[in-house]
Image (cartoon, rainbow, N blue to C red):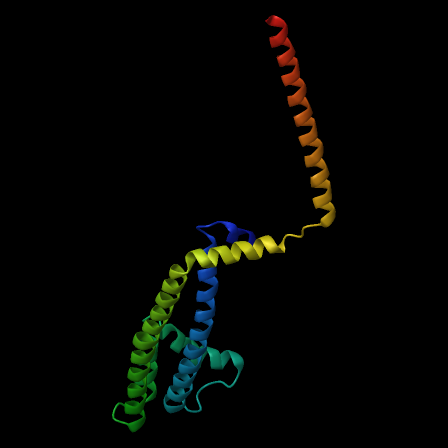
Length: 185
């Protein structure tokens, strides 16, 4: 839909960069989904065994939502669930808290830094190749425009007519000027 914007020199490479970053983001989201699903299922199996309603709404509300909000630094609900559902001295409590600590370190520190590094790398890659990328995008856009052979013939006929008319008027004007100059002398 924004193909025509690729022709603009300062905007084309940026749109190309955004499309590449979206592909990187999709790859990152797959990794994040796997990690969050693993932690969600493991921690909830330990602390809420048999207490979760087995429906789509119950699974998303009690398993995936709290872990999703942990990415943004909202840990209150997860700590409450762990503290209320488990005995403080039990093995399940210790393992659930260890899982939480590992998950927070892995997702909030390592994976988000990975995302920043991926975006920085992609940005630098595109910045280094800006002119080449822009020339390629412009060429691709120009090649999409259909050029009819009939149009070329019409243009040639128009150009020939105009050129002939212009040349004829120039010759006529100069010959009139030349006659006037020669009659004055």
